[in-house]
Image (cartoon, rainbow, N blue to C red; front, side, top):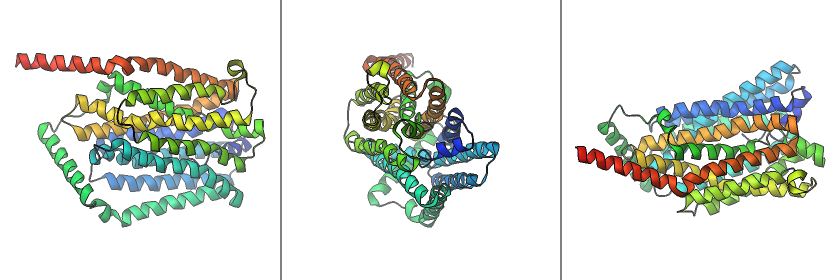
Length: 418
């Protein structure tokens, strides 16, 4: 998912595609991921999980292959439409893997959600770290097409491994088998309680804690994806860092994110406050990405940009990793009888928020950079994050407890009537 940031923008510009359109191309991936995640949240089960994951990984490989073949075309429209379709296919494929994967963490490991998500995010950060580095190395070795073909065949190979070892994955080890049995038992109990009940997305729109958690994580992803269409170009034009080397600088953000997950996995309480802390610091650091002289009184220097970029990787990890367990906890309070649905919907909302950040981040990054330049566009993103922080305050201090009291009062009234 992360290999195209160091060198695709320069390739697109060579085909006369502007930065704002490059942002839209980057956003096609999360567009497919966003729509697919919400649908999958309603349809995934223990029985179809692995088939969906295999198809998803294969689709990502297909999208990467399409990107590689675009190198042989000079036409503006072929490259533009082909890039958009390839990203869209990759986004749907990513969702088909990630949504079932994250949905089963709260179900199989209810007491270790943060720890297991942290492990998953370490692997994610390794991917985001290795992607630009390997992409740059393969680009130097074989040009534009080699990174795409290499990772496409890696995707197909991973899909084959899941198929080959499907039986062993369906029969977990002893400690895990108890969780699977428990999960299947819970599913059976839910069907007995109310076979027709389904958690409504429309109803969740009036649930402020769910909505603000969704918005927070969307902005968190935007802190990274906002710069996908522009940071490599900025490093080239401002600091003369060529595309074959920019991937190494870009990957620093992923390395610090991976480091943050080890700390975040140990957080057992006050999760909302840690999420808020990470978001506030990340928002303030956007003013130093350029840096923007009007707000910082600092002239552009590579040291400032890299320090801000790397620190955001660490601080943004807090809202990112803690969002899924937080949403699952919110849903469990309201739908305690339906833990499987809560886990599925929480995963769908989490992945939709990721997709939202990946969708809007590149589009805003491309257009704002075109209109205001890299430095001022980073500051505008910082203002947006800080406004979100203000909106988060009601939930941070009293809204969660207030909603719990209202719900308890309603239940008491229902009991009196009965």
